[in-house]
Amino acid sequence: MQPRAPGPAEPRRVPPGRSRARSRGAALLPSMLMFGVILASSGLLLMIQRGILAQVGPPPPHPPAGPPSRREPPAGPGLELEVLRDTRNRTIRALCGQRSMPRTVWDLPAGQRRTLLRHLLVSDKYRFLYCYVPKVACSNWKRILKVLDGALESVDVQGKMDHKSDLVFLGDMKPEEISYRLKHYYKFLFVRNPMERLLSAYRNKFGEIKEYQQKYGVEIVRRYRKNGGNSAGDDVTFSEFLRYLLDEDVERMNEHWMPIYNLCQPCAVRYDFIGSYERLRDDADHVLERIQAPSFIRFPERQAWYKPVTAQTLHYYLCNTQRRLIKELLPKYILDFSLFAYPLPNITSEFCRQ
Image (cartoon, rainbow, N blue to C red; front, side, top):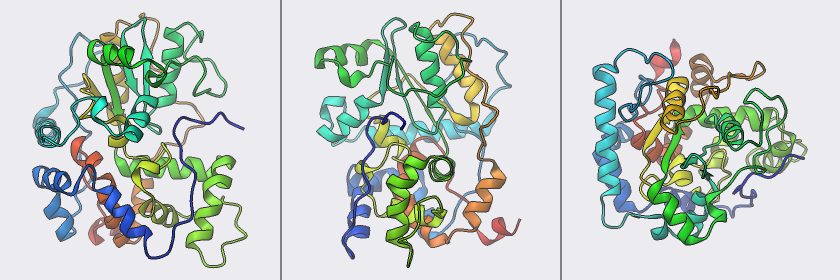
């Protein structure tokens, strides 16, 4: 059995009639007022009310580059990327600037702080903190951390990734040690289109990982499928998975589908750099340059067996899922869409006919 990753929660039975209301209440984080501010500032409220779902646009922006990259950087970001950057910055300021928002990790409730600190990996040698997000190339970043620490010879070493050994988690340190590193270390995370991340988690965990099929899949099928009691959990449909997410409290979710906001708390931690999965290689090079990693360390190539979520794959799943189900799920991930400047999923009739 694989080592247990930090933070996943067990699936649980939900009393009829109460689950949907409770999960929606938990989704409007950190409060109904803040949620309204976020939606209004990002212009998403009107889109949700009218059912207008934007088409997939360019990759999300990131802060201006610092030192020169190891590779020749791509052409200038262009007007669209500048607009997205400005939208993201204004939205983050609108959210994190509110009085009720956490300013430090110590302002967070104990459960949220525990989740955050379990996802902040530490390199004391290179003085950085990395908030890892499952399904956003975190395994490769963990390989890099192990190489930097001397626990792994090369990022190309084959073998199953141990997600706990030879890694240092900020949550294992004393409060004064935590505060020092949060103040003085370089901090970064990588984000991904929320729907792509959910689809990637669904295909990987329920299509390939028997542990997840038994632990989550059996319960999901039993809960949402008539006469589904004989399922081995390996035939969970995408719609059943989304219904399960609707009924789960955000803070109890497994880390592979918990919103990035809840995993990394970008208001409580002021990140120096937010990279994106869509610009992974260039953004990774920027980070490696910034932390002054040895020149022989590079971001690993994608494994040959890996099956990426393509635009065509996402199109297929979105257009074969009830529009109502996707729209009801959006509030739980709206902070990820808004803060990181990702467009809402396009499920219009015109788009799905293409």
